[in-house]
Amino acid sequence: MSELMAIGVPLLRFIQQMANVHPWFANTTVQNGPQWTWDFFDQTNVAAANAVPNKPQMSIAEVGWPTVGILFSGGVH
Image 1 (cartoon, rainbow, N blue to C red):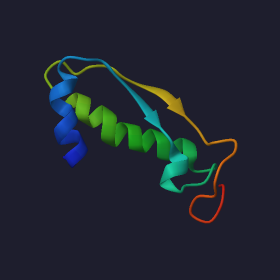
Image 2: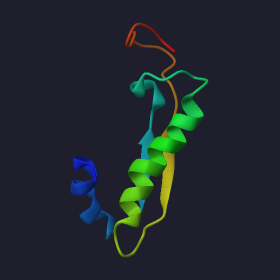
Image 3: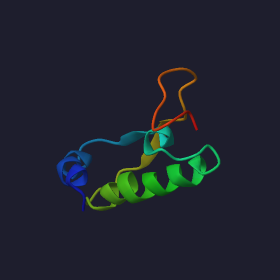
């Protein structure tokens, strides 16, 4: 269990969780973005929710790439 999950798991007993998942920050491509998003969400957010007794329903609230901004890791993907 990651450090982030260890901190967040106790809170999941009391709330339903919505996650912002941004593949751009993971330096993945647009073509790989949908699969990366699902995998990250499932392995991080859903896994944390499944670690508590009430198993709150998880949802992705926001996903995507910025339309403008600074270059990240050599460019906009």
